[in-house]
Picture 1 (tube, chains in turn purple, red):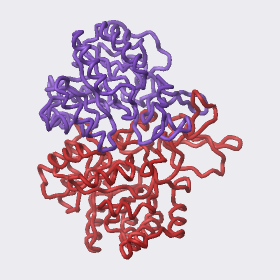
Picture 2 (cartoon, helix red, strand yellow):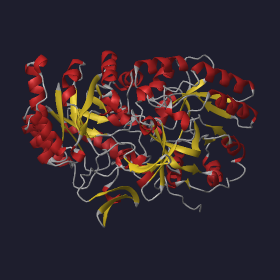
Picture 3 (cartoon, chains in turn purple, brown):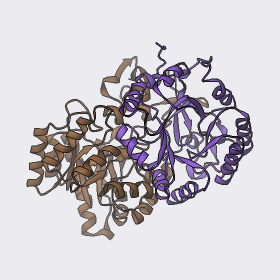
Picture 4 (spheres, chains in turn purple, green):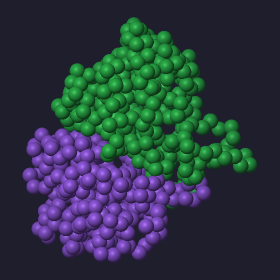
Length: 285
Length: 333
């Protein structure tokens, strides 16, 4: 099993993003996903900028995948997506069935991201026929589910990646919750997300951290941390352990997580992996 | 333009058809559909009766099989599709790729509608489902503005159905994990959002606490109008603001009566009323109003106006007794 670095889900200034990927280039992380997955209004980096970073990472010896939007709403977003798929150099992470279609039409291979509805082997097999090389297990599924899928055909004809560390993308909406918090309309959001580089934490009325607002995306307040499950994943045959970055420190986590469990246990969760409510932290057996 | 109404049981189905529904949709009494609540839905025998009654009325009946089969348990979903084909329903509403494949390859003449749980919002996704499984229709998620619905309708290779009235899901349906994050069960896996067994109300002093799997999602006055407790309609504080607010959405229902002419002009073929979990009284009230509205529009499109009496009748059965245009209206977003 190797490590992968998922796409940045937050909206950062261009310089900060560039610095981040310069560090990634110098890391030992073999597989890097990058690109805007949340909102097409975020234009700090355009596709050409991500493409340039992708080439820089490739030159540094990384395998690179370009991630695409999870929620496509306007015709222009779909037109832009088709251009991204047809980039001539890198495969894409499809986060919507529209991206699968765009890749399939061009007979290009693709990866299925965590926001695709892949709930059984027959579905994955179909996607594999259309060009899926690897899939990221949907975040709400468990170790038991994965064992079942892998047992259906061992080894499976596609690679398996698990979202192992980071804040979970729980939902996407037409509404921008971050802009709304600042009293702004989505159409004139003034890129409100820039003010929240790790999302905006929301708590219950008895101060239990619950959610994290990230534009149109709602994330978990707790950080999923499956570092204690690495051995089990290896035994199962998982190919990649995904670290979803939220700061520079995520690079270090990605570099070391396969050899040592992380030490920071404040507000973490692993419930989904153990077939329980996602926000639960269940003691390793 | 079809008026498509929910039927949680035979009584609701008959009520809907008598009140003017053109078609009804329903689910089986298990986790093959996303409204798997106790006391709701149809056994195979009741489905047969429902189909016979509907056909006698000259109307249409659609069976919802819109959850995602668990590995090793696919048989239950396959049997549901076989049963639907045997019963002769007019269409199946399906979300899972493997089930679309199963239904299309075995029963090519049984029309397929793409469930909202498949979360198809764009031309690419619709084209894929059309090319691969010959779907006839897609139900659009409640994330598109009216303009986006219009734009998509101009190029879509399949008929479009939209939600016209009922509880408002504000996330891209089929890809929302808020319920499972808190309870372990989601519409996709367990067949319902915010399962009733995890909901608990507790009164203390002059307030009512709403708990979902022991997570406090709301605290309200005893007289406040509350909707069904779901994570996205809860009240929370943020890092920036200590005052508890509905930071995602407040308890409210979708109501598109005022958009009816625009939806008709966009060639939307079907208006869906949400609420298989609601009572026959709800189904009757909502169906009557929408029947009157559609008939009024069709009789004189240019003169169509929403009637205050319709709005009042709908507000009475709306969640939180308020309504919204949701994502159809750009300002809501």
